[in-house]
Image 1 (cartoon, protein in one colour):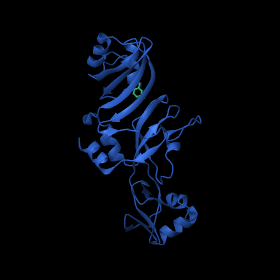
Image 2 (image 1 turned 180 degrees about the vertical axis):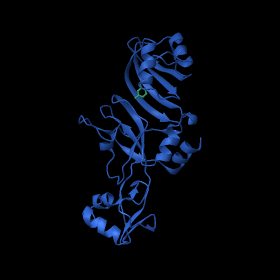
Image 3 (image 1 turned 90 degrees about the vertical axis):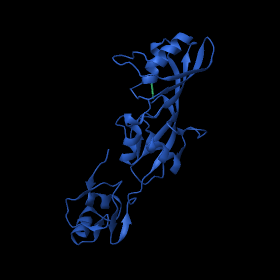
Image 4 (image 1 turned 180 degrees about the horizontal axis):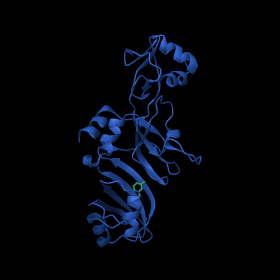
Length: 239
Ligand code: URA
């Protein structure tokens, strides 16, 4: 996930000066990276992690890390940029002076809890299968699933060359036309919850993620974001 860029490009893109002038500053020994003077022009840096000083002044975000939760609305795609001009989740997280990216993904038509960060170690820690964070979804499905169908979901179903691991499934409410299921899974296969519900004959009408392990979306309004609290970051990483 970490993208390295040339030091002179980073300095120029921070609006300090032209790339040519940046090269002069580097050669003249006016630039430090993580406290160390750098005079070699080819040097690459990680703009999200490295502290760059020009003439003693810190530029960029000085390696500051961001940990954010977003209540993603439907209609936004989970990438940092899109060649087809579709709306991305990054457009919803303004005023962050760092290149943050989503941790894991939600389908364009799924709403709810999405984490974003510029800390690769954090992202890896959260999505690593060994953590087994339960991701909890509220799925509105067509029809009223019977007990046997719910048991199937709990045990694991074949979603096409893959049998899902045991899941937590609860019928919250239902009528013959539509029902609400709470589904907790530890995996993250593409469109997993939709495929699971389809397999039992109750396709998803709307899907929202409400929890990732100890992180709860709560009443954060749709389209809004907030920084994670320190204890939330600690709990996510310590499991
Ligand atoms: N499962 C899905 O089907 N879609 C999502 O966006 C997340 C989990």
